[in-house]
Image (cartoon, rainbow, N blue to C red; front, side, top):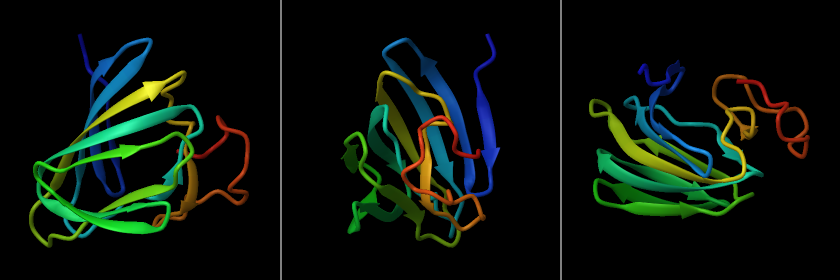
Length: 129
């Protein structure tokens, strides 16, 4: 069985489990990179950090995270992670729980790679990858 993986401008992810009621990913954020400031309307997430350190933002509140830290992201909350290291990847396990786990349930509020949505309140399922 081939597991889904994807290379992104900020790093990569590997799907470890994809079930009807949850999805699990191993996410690697390259040194000095960050994910878009985004929200999901059909899933919550739990992140457990296994390598590196970074700055996590949840609804405009910043928190420092490192290996061993865990974060809960409620449905609809804006969030972002940034790898602060210049040489060490930031790695975390993401557990998604909800009714839908597609990559198109991402509303990008801010993005370093020009993928931010023009209308942040658009209908889920129409966001660019």
